[in-house]
Structure formats: C-alpha cells, structure tokens
Amino acid sequence: MAHKCMTYLKLTLVAGLLFIVIFQFWIPSSSSGVDIRPRQGKLEEKLFSEKTEDLISGYPDIAYHTKEDVARFVSMCVSYSPADLLNIAEANNPLQYPTQGVEVQPLKTIFIPGLGLKQRESSNYEFFSSPMFFLLLLLFIFLLLYQVQLKATLGTFDVAATVDMVSITGEGEQQMTLSSRLLSSLNRQLQVVTYTNTVFHPKTADLIQFATEGHQSFFTIKIGHKTVPKLYKSGYEYNITSLVTIATKTFLRYDKLKDLIDSIRQFYPKVTIVIADDNEHPQPVKGPHIEQYIMPFGKGWFAGRNLAVSQVTTKYVLWVDDDFIFTANTKLEKMVEILEKTTLDLVGGAVREVTGYTATYRHTISVEEGGPDGDCLHFRDGFHHVIEGYPTCVVADAVINFFMAQTDKVRQVGFDPRLSRAAHLEFFVDALGSLHIGSCSDVIINHASKIILPWSKTETQKSYEKFRYSSVGVDKNLHNEIYYFKNRFKCMTSQ
Image 1: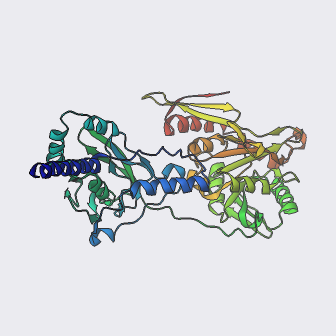
Image 2: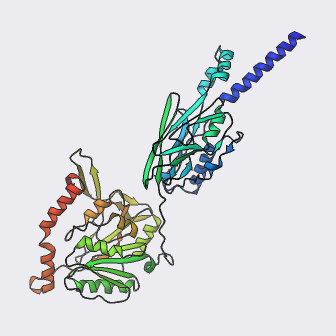
Image 3: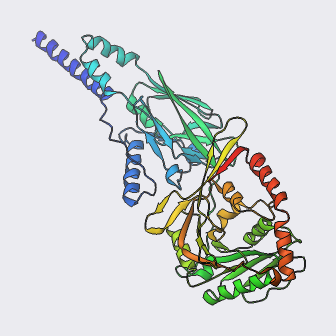
C-alpha cells in the first residue's frame, strides 16, 4: 500500500513538473508577417490593425495593477503615412519590438507597443529530449531568470501598471531593467512600458536599445509636434473659383498682361488673379477679382513669384507667365482632378507656340554622390513613368513654367530671390525630394507670338529686351554660385 502511494506521489510530481515546463516554455507559432504597401486600402489597414492588436495584447490571463500616476499621462501614437505606420518585428532573435511608427510629442508620454521576449521552439524540443531532463528542470525552475533592458538618450522609461512576479529597476530613468522567472508575466509587463520624452526638440528621434542576454536590437521613437492641418473651403467639387488662384509676374508688358487677363476671364470669370509688378512706373491693373502688388523696381523674377504666391489663399496656385493666353484646351479642372486624386504636389501642362510647337519641358533630376568636394547634378530630358489612369500624364522632376501646385508646398520650397532675370530649373532643384511632380500634355496654354520685326518694335519692347537679356552673363555667374556653393555641387550635366 505504501509502495502504491509512493508511486502515485511520484507520478503526480512528474505530471506537475511537466505542466510547469509546458507552461514555461511552450509558445504558439508566430503568424506570418504583414506586407505593408503604399496607399494601402481599408482591408490592408484592418488586417494590419488586427495584427498589431494581437501582438500587443496576447496575455489576457496575466493580471496587472495600473499605476495611475503614469497611465494618466500616456497618449496614443498616431500615424499619418505608410512610412509612419506602426510595424512590429516579431521575435526571431528573440526580441520583439516596433521597427517604425512610434511617435511622441515633445515632453509627452506614450506606450511603447509590441515589446516582447520570445522563446525559440527549437530549444524546447532539445530540452525535452535531454537525458538530463529532471536535473535541468529543477535548475530551470529555481535558477532561470528572464531579463530585458531598455536604454534611451532623450527620454525615460516607466510602467503604467505592475505585474506580479516581475521585478523592475530604473523606473523614471533613461535605463530600465525588467526581469521575471515567468516569461508570460514578463511579456505582460512589457505591454505597459511607457516612454517619456525629456529633452525638448520640435523634430528629432530617440534611438532606443532593447537587449536581453546575448541579443540586442535598436529602434527609433520619433519626437515631434503633430502637423497642424490646413483646411480650405472648396465649395462644390472642383470649383475652380474656390480652389485655384492664378499668379503671375509682370514687367514692361502691360499689353501682354491685358491679353492674358482677357483670356482668363473668357473661361474663368471669377477666379482670383494675383499680379506681382516690379515696373519702374507701375500702371494700375483694374478689374474684379484682381490683386496687384507693387514691388521695388526691377526686383526680379523669383522675388515676384515669392510675393505672388505669398498672397494666395486658395488650396492651389496656378503659375502662368504674363504673355500666356488661355484657350479651350486650358482645362484647370483636369489639373485639380489629378492633384486631388493622386499624391502629386505639382502638375505642369504644355505651352503651345504660335508655330504650333508644343512643349512640356519634362526633366528628370538626379544627384550623384561625389565625395567631400561636393555632389554631381544631372538633368535629363524625359520622365519617370506614366501615371495610372491618366495616360497623358507622367511623373517627372521638373516641368514647364505653366503649372498648378499645392500652395503650401510651393511656399515651403520657395524661390531664391537672387535669381532676378533668368531662372526656372533652380526651383525644381530646391524641390527635389520635397515635391512629387507630374506633367499632363493635354492641358495646354498658348504662348503669345515672339515674332516681331525689328522695325516694328515699340520703345517698351526694346526696353524689355535690353533689361531682360543684358544681365544674362551676371545671372549665369550667380547660377554657378548657387549650384556650386549653396547646393554644394562640384559638377553638373544635362542632355
């Protein structure tokens, strides 16, 4: 009888030990990764959201105790683009952590989502097959300790709740250590780890070190103010009057300017026209929905662009030269549509000369690393690719002087006011990496004839040509200064 009881006791002990081992080391297989693509749809967003929630809330059976003094300061991180979406690297090293998408406002507190420590399955099988099973089992039960460390440079760590059987040191400091003999409890605790930014900066990032014995990983937490939205009253869909302002710069060509305004009013009678005027003897340009801004004499081309764009209050600005002519093919609705329905920031059209030749002036621009002396700038005729759904439109890096763009985006790039007589591609070089640019060949504006017989030129026309072309050499030297000094280029090619 005593022998049977002893046998029963041993079996019970073995069963209990096996239960502990399984509880300690068995972890379900991780699901496959999620492919995050640009412009993801509702389904992808839903799947990605469910995936993230599953990763950061996988221990509902482990109780925790909320720390009110920490939890009340925590704000949720919000993403605004695919590049900022939360993405968690599931454990394969065996640390699990967010690879991107974690953001905090300056001096604020957030949860760090997705932190975890996982046990590799292969080591489980080796453990169970070991002849030293019972000895190792006892050692694991009494000696094994799971531990992770977090380090930051621009903030501190804490926990919004405490979990039983988890030890924490360094709360409220730049380095925090968490340890437990129960892996599930440690992972439950990691779900409520917080980060507080302590060094104010409007836009930066903190590099976080996340480590365990034999492994370490790094991820970033973006630090910055939220972008304040700018909303515009657009009226009905593609209401050009509400959405678009036409901007131009004029100098010694009031006759051409009058023709431009007359052609605009033929198709868009109520759209606002903003005119930057640096004539020596300005003439008033009158009419409804016209704003004329007088500049110092000869201030220049790009300075005029800056002034005109600065006065635009609509979502989009259309830039035209003062000697352009609107026609039935100048469909601003097409430009608005493609800007509204794509990620483009700026879209150019085509300019038709009196000879019938039509130009889009499409270019690609690239910068080649050139070492300590500067980089090399390359201009190439052409474009990158056709835009899906718009067969007459392409993506490029530079377009012609007839373009529509998001007003705020153009202001952010700006026009170098030192370029006063001849300038165009300089704006697109400054916009490289900032503006997404397209070109549509079926939105066409006419160019007033430049064919003038020498004996028929007026005094105003002669003055314009003298002022416009006499300083080309000076501007060329300035161009070189801008390209080779301001933009740190040592060479430039074009074809």
